[in-house]
Length: 323
Image 1 (cartoon, one colour):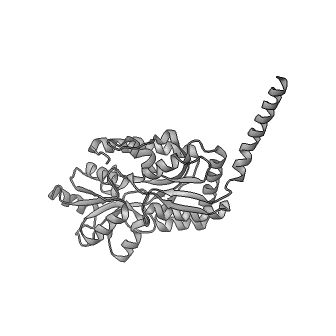
Image 2: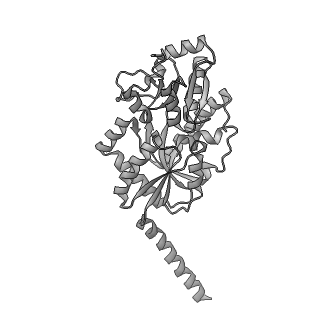
Image 3: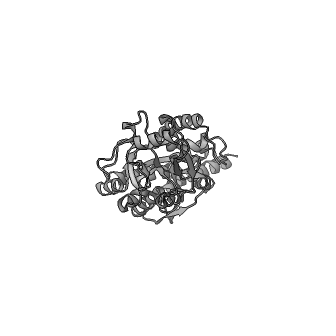
């Protein structure tokens, strides 16, 4: 009996010692970074920037894999179901943690609070209202006045029902007391194509994916929805200057399956915070329309809960239902 006890105790010590060693040896092979949004959008741009730098920091290739659908929740579900070994990482978005869980009608197979581990916030997005350049709209007041004169006629696109672009538009119409027609698409790039073609009037979207089209004249920037405004478009006003109380922000971070090791999560957090402190990477993010963030996993959890409360009010007030 005594031998069995001793043997069990020794086995426990071996296993206990093996866990930290396993975490310390991570990664020993390529890591997948799962992005739930289409190529060419703001999420994809950021995912590839981060993957490139994590590849250098970790000594193993970090490969971006796009799994689109359900405003990012297909990707979130796939990561939640993956082995918790650190080789499948999620590009965690505000939508995944804050809006989809409180969206009526949305069928999601996971409870993100239970099956996903927030690791670190990477960056916020500089977001803005932009229009087809053939429209007469040059200011926020122009849009509001036209919408009041023709209720339900003006159109705004989005990346999908219940997604952040839809919610930004809903908040705008609520505060302005106007009625505009929401036209959802499967991701930001298809909606942008329709605006450039003149079939949609405007969109509330992010600077990273629309900046080339602003510079080429494909769309016209009207105002930033996020505060503070980006230095990339100096002089462009903010919506809140015309519409008090309006602010629409978004952010991206990293997540892991909930049962992943704390050591791996801490390593990822440390590497992201380290890269965000480098002037070259910060300047790159800002030039593309992102706001560097960083911080602890607890700060990311707090942001998820804060934004969940904010956007639930918008969802309920506008009777928004997911698909």
